[in-house]
Length: 238
Image 1 (tube, rainbow, N blue to C red):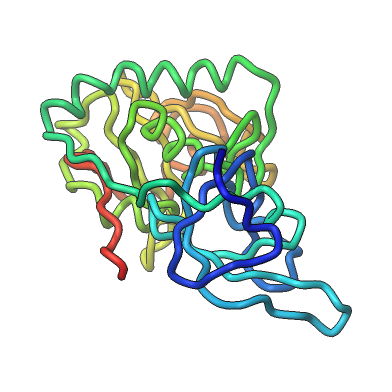
Image 2 (image 1 turned 135 degrees about the vertical axis):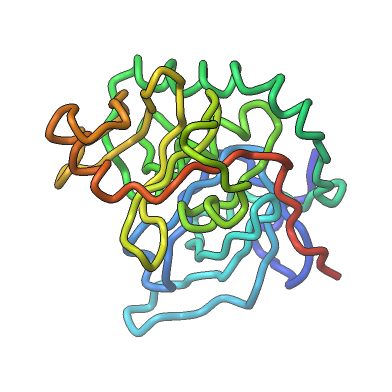
């Protein structure tokens, strides 16, 4: 049994999530930033921050992808001190390629369940675009950075003509990627897209300027293709 941390939190100590947790993008705890599946580990970044309305937020950082956020006191009740520090696993490019069919199968299984687009969603059944991609790779033990632009920076850029199933396809303005999908081959990709210019959930689209109105909208913002060659290694902390 893990020691409880419900009444005591220590900075720079690793904790483990007992259940799936929502993690927010500010101390106000109003907008979801990401989610952590049961078993993930995190650091406490700072002591509790009490807001004007009396709400309490705790700054944390997830160990696997180094992603920051805030949790509320009810989430603290679901943390245990980690028995062992998180240790990232190293995979060769060949080992990753061998796991790609399982990652693709994860996204198709997610699409088969009723779902809608959820900003910050990584647990399911509701995902955002990069949350679906991160969850698919994490399901086979490969960690990616959390956000689309971070995934684009992490992946090895390749030409569209060389794209293979399991590569990532990126979309967005010139400044940075704001959307990502998983290439399936045969000119198609699977992605979780929002209400405004997408399917409000997971769907497969052609990577084409002559497809459906939704696929045309995304293709007009196409930035490039990236291949995952390694598992993310978060910065070492002491």
